[in-house]
Image 1 (tube, helix red, strand yellow):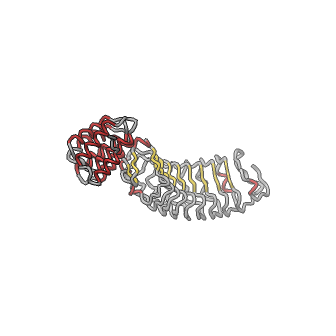
Image 2 (spheres, one colour):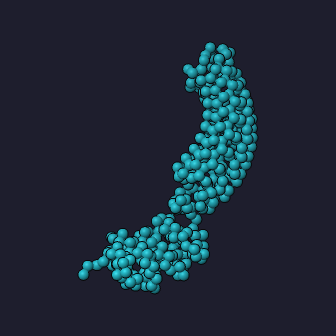
Image 3 (cartoon, one colour):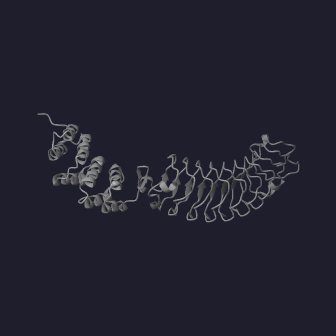
Length: 362
């Protein structure tokens, strides 16, 4: 007589040709006798034990043994799922143990998903034993991404929908770029974050970053931001990228005195101002704006790179105060350089061919 397959056993149970106890007995026999090389059949048998809601003591004993001793992640995980669904009164102890012992992987993800579906409070409380993030059914563990978490391009429309993100208090870098995010929120507990990527979203404002006092890099380019605001507490910020937004006025930067790199290119800025309190600034990109006059840069004594391309500038005399400037882009303006203008002898102007020249004395 040929041995029935897991599918045949479950089919006979569904068609009432096998009782629940007989189907359970046959599935248990298969699990105990299937060679280790055929894990697929073993996993299928475990799943069918769950579907027929088998609750015999010998079923629990076998599943518990698989949970603690089998070497296959999926076998352990599926055994845990059936224990949780079929034996809720007995599940707490073995599931609690495995949650604390198991390394991040398929088994742990199956257990967490199973616990999230149960209504029993004492079982749901076990979820507190592990830190994890659940985003649209995808489970992530801190140890899987160490100090960096990348959720770029996941079609996220709200940071608050990322369940468990608030638990990642040691996170250093967070990538949320290329999503549909409209508001910055849900980051209050990420106090150790030093790099935040929110470019290519639908942000119209910068808010709710007050608790990120250790932030050093903020990337919010390619959004719809019209005003620089909400940065007052980011005193350690060194890199700020606001390229390609809708900013008309430079302000709100007075308190981020450690800023070294600032990109405001491709905005709608008409006047250079609001940069007076940035003594450490080394890189400034104001290209592709509507600037007609260079002013407000005299205090930037450490500025080394300045990009002013594609504006409406006609005079550059005020740049002579920037003695540390090493690279200057001025192309596609309306500049006439006076013969007697003296700039730093170390200054490089790569796009000089794009500047309307009369005479240049460098």
